[in-house]
Amino acid sequence: MNKIEMIEVNDKDLGCYCLRSKPNSTGYKNKNEWLMERFHEGLKYIKIMENNKQAGFIEYTPIEYSSRVVYGENYLVIHCLWVHSTGKGYATKLIEICMEEARQQNKAGVMVITNPTTSWTPSKDIFIKNNFKEVDKAPYGFELLVYKLNNSPDPYFPKDWDERLKRFENLTILRTQQCPFVDIATENIVEGANKLGIEAEIIDMESRAELLKLSPTPYGIYGVIYKNKLISYHRLTVHSAMKRLRKLI
View 1: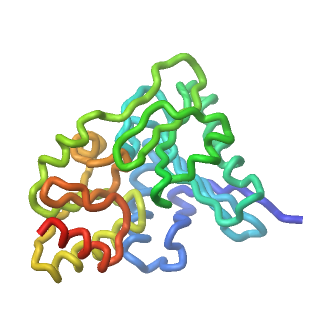
View 2: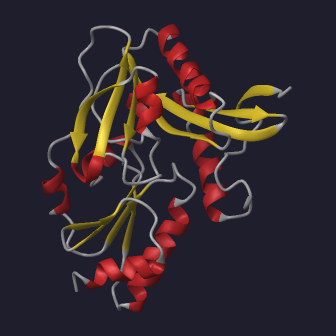
């Protein structure tokens, strides 16, 4: 019989799920430091353990501290949901933990941002299965799903995505450390750009206000812009980065 446990990561039991096989990598260290700075804001990072082995995790936080570009009041926002062992109901168990906490805190509900074109966001299907409803869309395939607990107004995306891109003519990488893969994603863009003789500027967004103002997509934590065009919001290989940049040279 499988032994299933839920372990809440905290400042005394730190260790993120992603990149755990590379604990000395910059991305892994940055993520753990980022977590340390978020716990006091109400962020929760919960791992599901199967026979003492990590099988998945969920990360969520109050919307006022979220790394996602979405507006609303009194919601919890799921940043990440990932399970290694599928078909066992683990994803639903993790979602239910978040939903129960929202009830206990008298929240308006729980929201999540999905995108069918990338694995960098949670899968939409599991949330539809758990009675989340789609309430908004944004360019590049982003969807806003919500499970509401009362009659509060729906959350919503900004509408000024084109205007955001117009701010950046030079190659610019906008990022936070919410995802441990942001570091390697940045390195690949910089390496590809260097090979093409393009200088990249890196902007580390330090606050939610800055993120809400600058991010080119709802994903929030990572975006690459060149000549007012979105290059990527997820990790690219060096080859893929060069291919996209060449089209704009």
